Image (tube, rainbow, N blue to C red; front, side, top):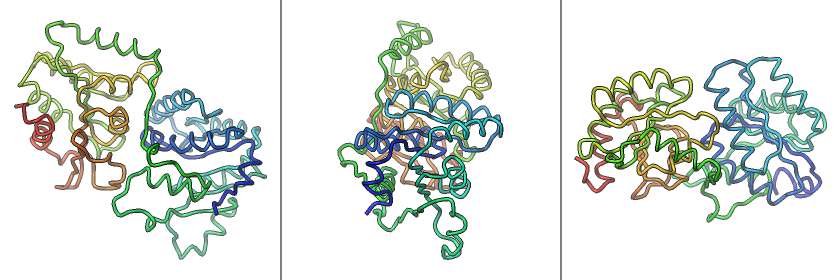
Length: 373
């Protein structure tokens, strides 16, 4: 029997799902949250995505903003509580959540599980609270004290998963254990529906930045930065790769994706590169709405990226994809196919920068029928 019973779900009016999700997390997670809402349409489902760091880091605040735009567009969720930049702002979120009088709070945080368990109880003294927790330390003897604010806890039992499994298998097990939800295998992989209002914005961007009618070659979307330097690929490697790929056709078009905070620096370096090479390379960052990003990815003929949400968006859009990942957490890798491949950093320190330009170019050529020279 599931931790949250069918009777509890039937009687529940408001549920809060608490998880400091990133963009890639939410792409896969939303399948299960939307399915839960569809199965229990009477429940008002809210999401707390604040990571409780209470700082003014631009990357986390901008990511939170675009996540909230995405969640709003899904249509299955009511309130979203985004990342805050101060204890006062976080307390304002907490007070707003208290007013909702949640019946059930589902905390899926693991690394900050004790903190979220306590916060959940602060939000509602009456809610049934379930918390995901790390693998048991000290034989779990202290868990009753650590998680005294939660009515129930659960640990993901990896022994119940196949040796080679995908992140969707983990979410399937989690939601089945906690809520009894089971999503059909044919519906488990992510999808992303781009609002029609965004499509003209994408077309206009492409026309403005690649306006030479004689140079409308293959469109490549590339991304070399992540939120962790161990997962970044040096920009000089990226420029070298672009030059190698462009040798076969200098009419090819390259889009370098970056975050708003990295945009000025990447733009300066790219302008210097294009002035020297004469190649069509443009830097992109989300301007007004989250869907500008997946809409542009969906237009690409090929995507090359490090381990960020970009690889998951490309997979969801079924675009040809070459990704670079560290060997940690391989269940995040998209399924291997003729048009989707992951290169793992197996040498040096196991950082993405340890993957050479030659390795990436050779694999790119192979995936394109070795026609690229």
